[in-house]
Image 1 (tube, helix red, strand yellow):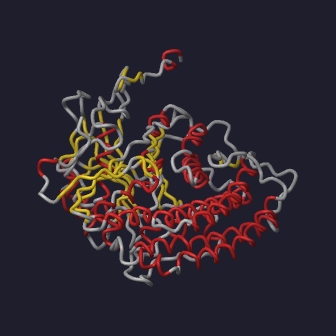
Image 2 (image 1 turned 90 degrees about the vertical axis):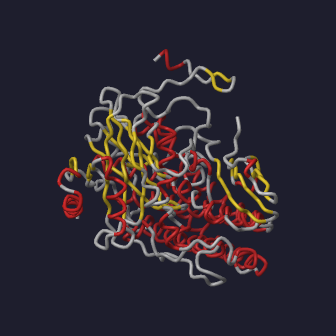
Image 3 (image 1 turned 180 degrees about the horizontal axis):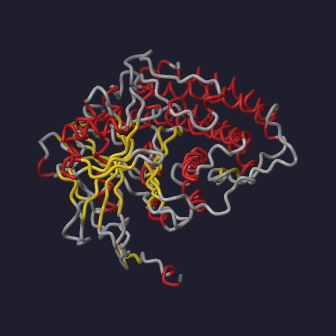
Length: 389
Length: 171
């Protein structure tokens, strides 16, 4: 079986086919890029995905809604909380119970989601630095991420795949002292983040390496269905947390950072990177506001039960529903078809952000240097677990 | 908004273009005639009143073995105007391997549809007419059958490895 899309006999004299990946650290998982190269220039780039395909959607058709949540965790394994939150919101909307969820539960959800968002962006930043030769920031990022993972482990019992947010509530209330520890973490994290910022974002070698590379014009980004930092990096103020205003985000104060072309052209790799860095600061802001409310007006009480509103049996009435929400990589959507009789979805399609974000890669790669291709791919920030599902 | 879009489509393409509508649920659904979907999509994207520039999601659906129908669902949203709509086409098909359900491709309208249509082809066997590069995307090229169909049965072996899960028989 021939695994190439390009026909080698059709190549011009100077051209060569180069397989990049699937087993290579800079491919961020198992992604294979089939490159047609002319010297150092990429003439064509064909991504081959599916090495991590588990057919999530087929699994989902055989399980009830509560049982699907662990599978949703494993889609984008760096942002399990956000995945759960989107999925759970969709099921709650279908059941019509989204207004009965206690405020404290909603704030805890947003708090853990934002912590997870910081962790995900830290990985994106750290590995991106490493992709293009800066190894030190990687350790800075992983050290801070470890604190977040410890906090989330304390709350949920797992380090990466939490299964913490449930339909109608939470697995458990936050452990005693969590809010205080979390506030302490944020206090020590902010100066560390500024240090990291100085180390990488404004490093002139880094800037020279990423500015004016992989420029994604806004119209192309929209046409390819890019979302999240990809779309905002191209200069559009579009964050579903603001647009749809789901959960308690309308009550929280935060900015939506966008790419401005400060170092080069709007929509280049540096802009996308910078959007992620500034989003971390916004997530810190959101987390602080959540902690403030969770320790003041929504303080824990002994009789508070986060499982009180869990529906006994999750059987939505017959309908179709598409839920979308902002996770760190962009728009995550779930399309449900419920038949009204069973507690299993008739169809559950996941629209993952990385899948659409990755599909723009051939357009960005054409004409780039091979070394820049790594920079472009890193700035897209894909997780193959989500691309392949 | 839903009615406005629906009336607009009827006005442009005639009454029979819209097969049915459902605006009672959480999101409005317009079921269109299959052969018109690409033209309607292009018009909805370009029209200044609607401007659906963002294809959120494209899903293929197997509507059941007894139904003998497949559907393709398009979730559109407009970034500038901030509204959403769900379009849907339903195709009759007798589920034969050599007779795939055919739907016009919208990959010329939104390029995000390119990979989504490949995924629908890969997992459900929906053939998108006019797609530039309709190959399998998630499963290997030599995979047999379409995994998300309701009547799909896994092969015994793939590439010399046993893949059938015995536990299924005991349930």
